[in-house]
Amino acid sequence: MTVSTVIGASADEVWALLRDFERMDAWFEGMPPSVIEDGLASTQVGCVRRIEVDGQVMARERLVALDDAARRQVYAVVESVFGLNGYTGTITVTPVTDGDRALVEWTGVFEADAADAEATAAMLRDSIYLPGLESLRKHLED
Image 1: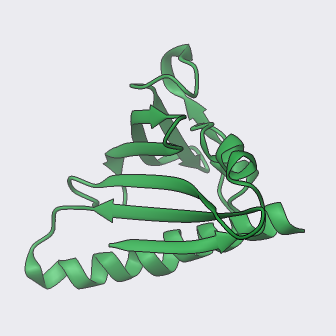
Image 2: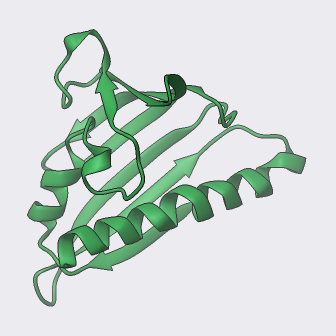
């Protein structure tokens, strides 16, 4: 599943925000702060981002790949209260050729049986991807 949007900011400006794996709360409205475990850098492949709410771990995600040339980040869920088995997410930023804008694509793949796949995809789309991309747009365009 992929959700995308065009944002009225340069690809470099958008990527500067997204490449910092720890600071999702800087652009995603309502996202609690996260912590990178074991003192690793937030751009170091292999680091783990822990997101907590009221002292409870909501998710732990590992940075699998970070490619500045391609403006692409790949991460995988290590642990989640949402039951996202085998989830891997990819965020890619591409310059738009007409104007100083950027195409942002957020793709996710996950393991689910047929009965749960549609509901899981809808939850990701409606609760994570769409609000996240809208928050990113507001942050950069306001």
